[in-house]
Each structure stands twice: as C-alpha cells, then as structure tokens.
Image 1 (cartoon, one colour):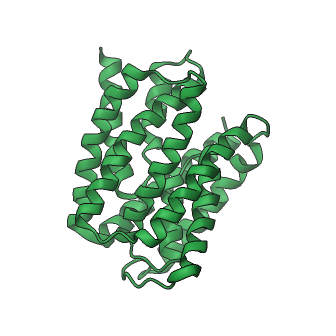
Image 2: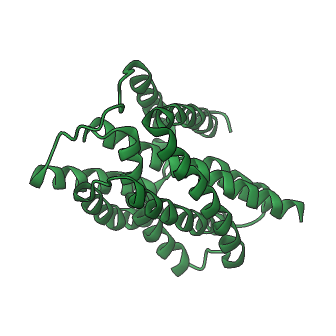
Length: 253
C-alpha cells in the first residue's frame, strides 16, 4: 500500500511541475521503476505516458482558458509532433540511443547557461514571426522535438518551452501554454504505440493519471498567478535537475 501511495504522490508532483515547465518525468518515472523493479521498461514507459497524457491534457485546457495561447504556432507544432513522435518511437527500436544519451547533458548545460545569462529572457511576450514563416518554424520545432520525445524523451517539455521563448519571442508563460498543446500530441502518439504493443498498466496508469491531473491543475494555476518570472525560476531548477539526472545516466550508471 505504501508503494502505491508513493506512486500517487509522485504523479501529483510530476503533474504540478510538468504543468508549469515540463520535466515531470524526472519524478514519475523513477517512482515507477522503484515500485516495479522487475517490470519490463516499455510497460513502465507506457504507463508513464498514460498518466502524463491525462495531466498534460488538463493543463493545456487550463492554460487555454486563462492565457492567450498562440494557436497559430501551437497547432502546426502539435500536428508535426504527433507524426514525428511516432516515427521516433519506431526508430528507437532499430537504432541505439547511446549517442543522444551522452550528448543530452551538454545540450542542457547550454540551455541553462543561456537562460541564466539573459536576465530578461522570456520576460516579455513579443512574437517575432507570423504567417507562413511562423507555421513552418512551428512545424520544424514540433517535428524535431516530437521525434526526440518518441526516440528518447527526457526534458521534452523544457526543450519546447526554451525553443518557443528563444525562436518565437514568447514569454515563459506563453511558451509554457503552447508547449502543453504540443506535449499532448507527443503523449498521444507515444501512447498509441505502447497501447498497440500491450505495454500499459491501465489501472495503475489511470489512478496515477488522476493524481497527475490534480497536480496539473495546481501547477497551471501557480504559473498563471505568478507569471513568467516564476516559470523562469522553476525552468532553471528543472534544467539543473535534468543535467544531473542525464549526466548520471550517461556517464556513471
């Protein structure tokens, strides 16, 4: 019973963090692997996707009701993410992810250093692009990050937030809102893959999903209430944790 309580608390916290800036998998996945050490990794990943899909969907709806979501960027990015996340999941079954695993900590260090150096980064919502250019850039970002999410995964939400701030000129709150829409598409695509392969623990995933939803509601309200400054600070914390976790996975474990 205590083990399941751990899963539900982890799912709540994952939903809260994920709703603000992504990175909820840092909390939820280790909890699943801790409680089910002998379970097939694919099954735990599929269960994690089910829970994450439910929480991220609620966060996306919550943001859309209170924040001006840039749908002209969000929808093309989400469509591309859906297609390429499935392609990434297919590719990872044929190509080892070791190179990405070792490269990822250095990419995250660059992301964190850039955000820390630019004090006003993401503080003002001033979109750079519109029209056809905006759509194609959104497709490129959605496709690239979607493929990465299906192929490997850690930090997908945080990468989306960073790219929508850096390339589109959104503030952190606006970027977080758009990233939720794209993340839903990634999760749906990957969930189809795991579902079709029989790698989802439905009862546990749905219970965790309920806790993830509660966390997402709390997280989205915190982000909207405290604005881009709060999101930026939490973003830096999550990136630091991602650097530590991915470095350990790539070079120590």
